[in-house]
Length: 242
Image 1 (cartoon, rainbow, N blue to C red):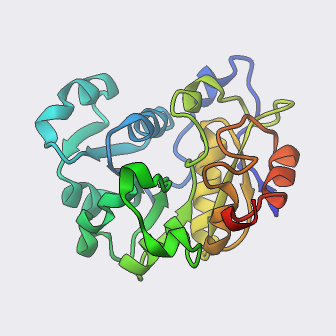
Image 2: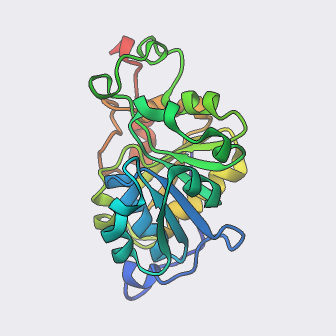
């Protein structure tokens, strides 16, 4: 495991100054967001804050997102999930896991996808391969969209803390967030985004390691520094071993 940070330094005005920095990769200008719930809305705010355009969608239709888009300003627009997927250089999938079969698979082919999903059987229904722990939530998404470059991230932070707990690079005791994935370049891009919006990024390895930060593990929805999070992730146990 390793902590990955970007290039932004601390400023006198803290995160207010940091959010005026430009996006971390000028070759990627647009975030597509599928799911405008708590996490999706907060990531939209964070992305707009560092200079990305945002195309945000939900299952109820673009017209239901008018107030959020008005808040986000000129860099944001509402769309359908397929349109958000097609527009995004980076696409966030943040919908209930039980609905991933409804994703616009063709539009997501080949995309860099940030997967925030968690498995809650009472919400998602029983999924046998997750119940027997033969796979993980992000690997399910990878199977559905095999050409996508998927990075697991933002599944273990309460949405409100994405803004409330953000701090500039180099701040002592800065909160860390996990990334996992099989594509090194994709992980580096997501790690730089995480740093730019106010957190350290802890790379825990392959997509298959994402179980280490699933619900009920020591690092789940807990504010931890990078060393503390690394220790928590290392101590995680499969449900069958708990």
